[in-house]
Amino acid sequence: MRSFTVVIERCSDTQLFVGYVPGFPGAHSQGKNVSELRENLTEAIAMLLEDGEPALETQFVGTEVLEVG
Image 1 (cartoon, helix red, strand yellow):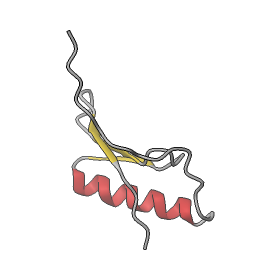
Image 2 (tube, rainbow, N blue to C red):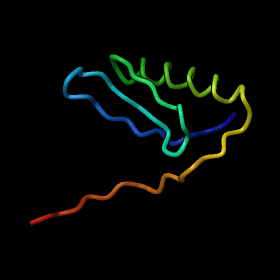
Image 3 (tube, rainbow, N blue to C red):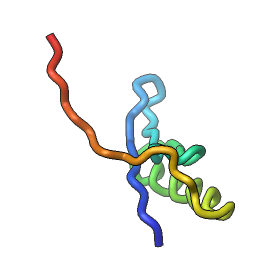
Image 4 (spheres, rainbow, N blue to C red):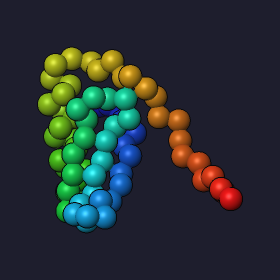
């Protein structure tokens, strides 16, 4: 079993949850709630893995809060 770091955001226009795996082209999806997003993204990643092991373009490091002004 593989583990991937997923970034989750909420679209202010559609109110959908959007998720993607940084550096993994095509590994993105959306859902009405986080649970649906998780299911959809798991399915998308599983289909991508059928083509073989991904060559990740970047590695997720983390998030940081910046104060400006």
